[in-house]
Length: 149
Image (tube, rainbow, N blue to C red; front, side, top):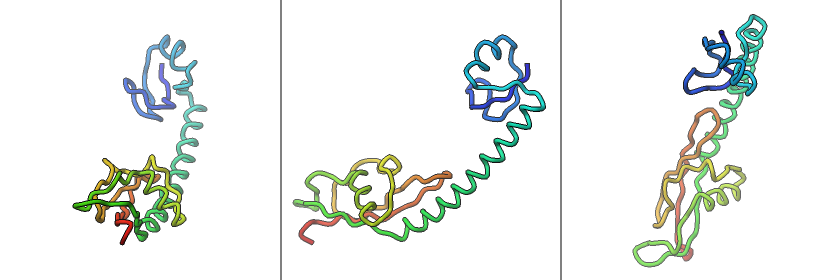
């Protein structure tokens, strides 16, 4: 039985692929769970239309993300923290601190999308990645300075 995948299934293929599966597998598992549609002309036309709409939305999201990327990369974030000897911080700078600093500048970015491998524990300048829609990544400059500076 030929079916069109509505979501990616590891053992079968990606979204939109037309695959041949056993009728019982399609009727008893895939169709009731909403993972596939039977590959008839009407459903194929529907899937093609949905893919066109999705591509258009992704294109608009990617253009918006490029504008956000330009705006973020021009901004630099300065975070003030208490520091001790050898420029070591008391505590650390985390994604939450970077999120708050960006929000203070008017940029709303969730800390889940801030790509900070490990917290910053020393004074200095750092480049931090921010994941955006459309697979884009912006690099912002984060400067950690001591509170007395």
